[in-house]
Structure formats: C-alpha cells, structure tokens
Image (cartoon, rainbow, N blue to C red; front, top):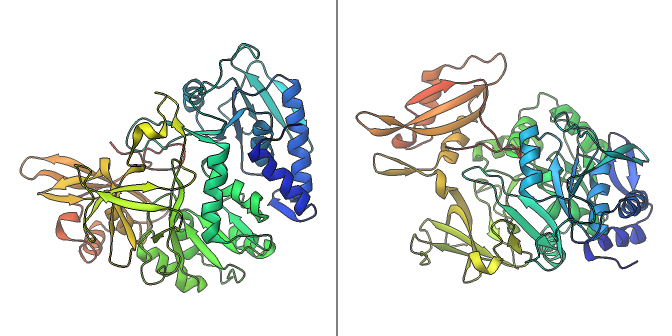
Length: 481
C-alpha cells in the first residue's frame, strides 16, 4: 500500500506507542494501536465501496474516537477529508455538501438534521458510520485540481461575510503541526483536555496530538465539574478551550483543582483579562491566549507574558513572521494599530471557489487576516478586532469584541453582542444585545456603571436589550451584520 503523509502520522504513532492511550472518551480508553486498527478497517471498507483519490468526502460525527478514525480513514483512501460538526442544521449541511462539491459523506448517525434516504452502513467496533453518495462514485469530478496533493478542506467561520472553502495539502498540514509544536513541546507524556468541537480544530490540533503521541481526553459536555473530574482522571497536562469554557471553569463552585495541568490555552475568540485573572486565581495557572486561523494554523501564542498581559495573543512563533499594514498596505510603525498580516510554514494552499491559489491572495507572501492588531516594543501582539466589525462612534473607532469582553465579565451576563445602530442626533450609538444567565436579574444601571469604569466613554453601550438568543455560526462564533 502506498501511504500518504497524513495517514502515515497515525501509522507511525501506532508503531511508536502501540499500547499508550491515545483517546479517553465516553467509551473508555483507546490505544494508538487500536485507533489505527479502527481507521485502517474503515479505510479498506471505504475503498471497497468506491471512495478514491480525487474525491472530497465529508466526515460528520460527534467528538470522540470515531471522528478521529473517520478523518484518518478518508485521507488514507487518497480522498480529501472535510470535517463537519454533527450539530450543523439541515440547511447548513446542504450548503456544505454543495459548496464543497462533496462526492460522499460518512456520518455516525448523531446528527438530528441529516437523515439520508439511501445510505449504506459500515460497522465499527463501537458504533457505525453511514456512507452517503452525492455523485456517481466513478464519475465524480476531480476535487480542487488547482491544488497539489490536497488533504483537508474546511470552510471559514463566515462571521462577517460568506464562508470560504480553505484547502490544505498534506505537506502544509504537517508543516503547521511541526511549527506549532516547536513551541507547545507536546509529547508522549502529555494529555490534552479537549472541550472544543473537533470539526473546527482537527488540522492543527488533533493531528498534532496524534503525531507527537499526546493523549486526548475528550469532555462530553461543558459542565465545569465534569471537565475538572476528567482532567484529574486522565492526568491532563494541557487545557485547550474557548473563552466561554475558561469562564465556566473560573466560576466553578467546586473546590477541586486541576493540579496536573501545566498550561491553559484559550482560542477561537478574544478573552478578557478579568476572566484570565479569575481562572489564574482559581487554579494557580495563567491563561495563554492563542491566535489560530484556518488559513495559517497557530502562528501566535502568549507563552511568557500571559500573567502580566493576558489580553495579548503573545509573540509570533519562531517560524512565522508578522507585519501590520495600513489601508494602503504600507507597514505601520511599532505601537500603531494595523491590519494583521502573517506568513510562515503550513499556510493554506488555495481557496476552493473561486479557485484562487495562496499566491493570488497574499501580499509579499503575507496573508491578510482581516484583524486589526498592535505590537509593542517587545513584540507583544494584541488583537483589537475584526476589520469588518469596526464601528465609528462620534469619530472614534470601536471594536465590538473589546466591549463584549467587558460585558461578559459582569455577573449574570452569559453572552453579549455589540451593534452600531442609527441615532437621529449622534449618527450611531452602541447597542448591546445580552443573553442573561438563567435566573439572573441584571440591573441595567449597574451594568452601564460597570462598563464606564472599564471602557472609554465612547465605548460604553448607550442602549441595552435582553434577548433569548443571538445568531451564531456553526462553529459557535457571533454573526455580525
């Protein structure tokens, strides 16, 4: 059998650490040898059923061993794998299938919104995958012919515009995991406490852990006590979580700690300094922000300024280069906000539709991220907000992410979204839409006073509305209008 580079990661892990635990999940423990055996069995069956090189295949499953085996199995056939969340709604699934030009999809039946009419079952040791075809298996067009050796495809989050299909080759996937682990330094003695959706973090996270022999302890829910118990049961050394999960853990009423943790990393969105300080006080462990983006990987982590500057995403990793640009794409001086550009190993290879190569969308090799950032004299980088989300209030620029971060540290606020709405005299004012925690009664005047102590006057919301829900992308990020 000719082995492709990404599938070979799993083979080498099984050979090097056959009896070491690879996964802790709701089914118990699974070793690297067992994970490989499951993926190989599935790969052989997929080949027999017609999956082959040149196709694009979706993998939709809940977090767990079968999701990992499914991704590796699809890639092992030579096809391109597109990780998909089992929590996608029916219209999102249809849009993904059509937008990604999928030939087929395998799913673990956990989705409530995907009920294929004609599917064949593939039995696993624990569970089942259904195989659904969308094109004639032998007449499917070659996926992304403008990319050499593609391995993964994933859509961007689409928070401020139409989601784009990002294609990552085998070489790029391995380059970005190597670059990230040059700083993370994960190995066979590590266990990652996993609470994020695998569908949105596979390429630079799950693949990295398997490659370097780290176990993955997969939490089944966000309840703080359950996460803490899993950390202690598995001997977790790294927590990789979203700001919401960090906040839940920081506010846990349990007196249990997580003494084996050596590092806590927050990703997916900006996190406020207050939440980081609460977490550090609770667990005696600072929170490191990490800046991850599907087109790049993980180019920045706040590894040694995290306690003093938890609001920063840190310094650029050794293998990457950062440049901040003004609106004319001229580099800005230190201390001046600018559009964030990044280049380094493992960058994406192309967009799917329109079929643009990396070289078509980069500036002097830098990918422009649509984020505004600022860098100080020591090279510490802080994200201000998204270019498309910046608001103009009385001539001042306001990044809603900053205001939302303050609001969400107020007692009783679960989630907040900031909008700029028309005003007859001011032109625009800030409006906060807030989801309150269950059984919480929030005093609006107290909330505004809280903001005034922490924000410049023009950043304080002038109107507050309580809502039951807010529009979110499938990856759990706020949709902005």
